[in-house]
Length: 249
Image (cartoon, rainbow, N blue to C red):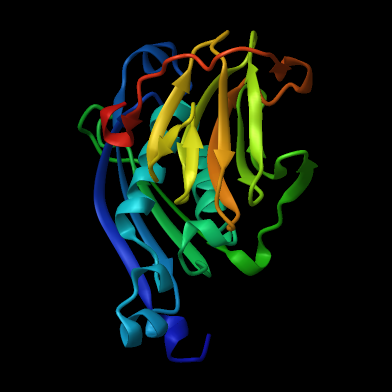
């Protein structure tokens, strides 16, 4: 990225998301509005010269990820929410995601109702890709990037290698939700469109397959954080699941 393109930003302002967030008992049972402003530093010149969206970042795809994380992360602190959102957006792209890298994320999160109209708590957070590290774990289907874990919940990117799949399995303890990040996966033997969301009930068998020559990816939330012993391989037929968009959660 040259000195000029390093100043390019894509900004989403006023994203209003109703979600569970907070440490108090009434906040754990009553959704609140969180207003998100996100500024992404990217090199837009290749996309500008070619008019190819895969050479920039699709802002709708970004907003869907933020909605998914806030609605299903059920964070206790704005600080934790902002930290995990930044780390997710700063992940280096895999080929199936068809996007450019994001060099920096600046977030502004507001809880307009938290003080009963007397004021608004606002959190500003900035993170750089060059200063963000991830633990990467090898799996039979590819690799897992550990985005972050708290005592209650874990956030992961599952990267499915070309012509491989996540074998049929279920969970008895973990509650799992998944957001498809890329183009080209199938889930339950049906095409899994990018930005689609699946919330897996405990005991429901599921699988993904990558029939392409690109690395494909899934954003995964596990509550509690991932338990190896609860990844239970089974034989049989995948179960039926309702597929959502993030705004429908």
